[in-house]
Image 1 (tube, rainbow, N blue to C red):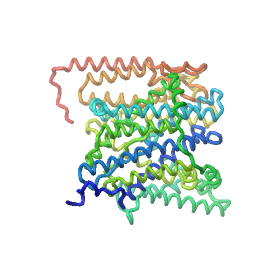
Image 2 (tube, rainbow, N blue to C red):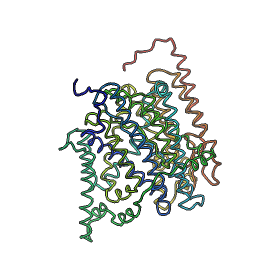
Image 3 (cartoon, rainbow, N blue to C red):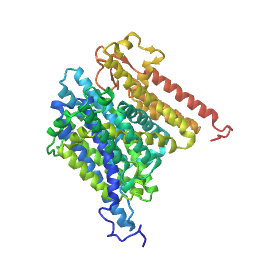
Image 4 (cartoon, rainbow, N blue to C red):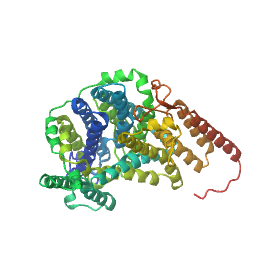
Length: 567
């Protein structure tokens, strides 16, 4: 018997290397919790009287989902070890899904909060609406993940990998990598050294003394610099603006201490049901919920395959079903954010982590969320000290989109990036207009509906970014099938594009109330009086013309001798 095989009773609950795995997984989950805290406060109005939504509902609900998943995957690892007689089995890593977190905040919760205020709701009531619609999005994703566990293989076989991964890559480039890259250079004194540590850890793969995880070192160093800068500015009233910009806000610590308490999870299924019972409130969100649920499903499936390649073969259906149950539990107990099987199983396995790292992560995250300590951690640890880790996630997602597809499909991945990049660009543009206090996008577009400002085509950007998660898939799938000369499949995806545009799931929009863009799904609420309305029937016709062209070419080329593809 070697060190990789053992009796059924020799697989331990915890080994020393589980501590290495725990620090890496915990830092990753901590970043997600800090993101929730920051984004929900500043974009969804969950401050002041509405802060209870975070501490009494969202964070405890997130803890429930993380604990359920971590304990299940740890148990699953023990079961696999017993079945195989091996002692080197590593549990699947699990936590809050970063792309879903960002997409649901930016495209479900924040718009709902802004629209609530524009309709005369108080900030607290508008924040409550944003939270409840976030719950709807979360449970929708969970249901897709749960029931998709039974058909995941079939979906994966019928959809080009380039179509799925290019959308994730687009989100990664804009809303993860680019956003956090800008934040790094917003406060470079704090964030550049942590970035160097993360790059050394994950690019150069150089081990640190005592096997300390690079993520932990980066956060500690960034935090240390922030507090050194804070001490300097306290004793230097005329310190340069760059130093003051990087100092910690000491007033937040006292406020955070006031949030400490004991917050048990609260079942919120009744509120969720009230929102679900009125389809007009959530049908327009399907262009976000459906693709994100599918991406979580496919992404988790790929990570299970990665674990199998690393030597740990877990059941697909049970693993994906547990993932879906975790997300549904999150929604039922107040969290708006889906969970997922993380990438990186081979990395945790290489560290020597087994099942204990998963159990420990679930327990520690639960303790932090149930006590409200996350706010105190946020006031002590600057976000910039840890965002390099999330930046790395975005880089890896983007790189994998090109490396994990057949090399001839790389151009299809690139085509699928455009709508997501347009979405990120529009978010920046809209924010700049809103902060300027001058002419709004609505004013500009009413004056010139096809506004072209210095060759910056606003209408085209807004149209391309509306429902971009669908559009990314559609354009990438069409491109991949054309590369393979599967003209009828490309035509079928063009028909899907026409259907989505005709329904208003993609490309259509209404602009009103200071640059707020609303979906124009035909089953959603009526159009807003005074809004600039664009129904994308011309885009739908364009997709139909594309489909007809592909079908004609497919019939014309059938049976003909064509040049051999050089790829």
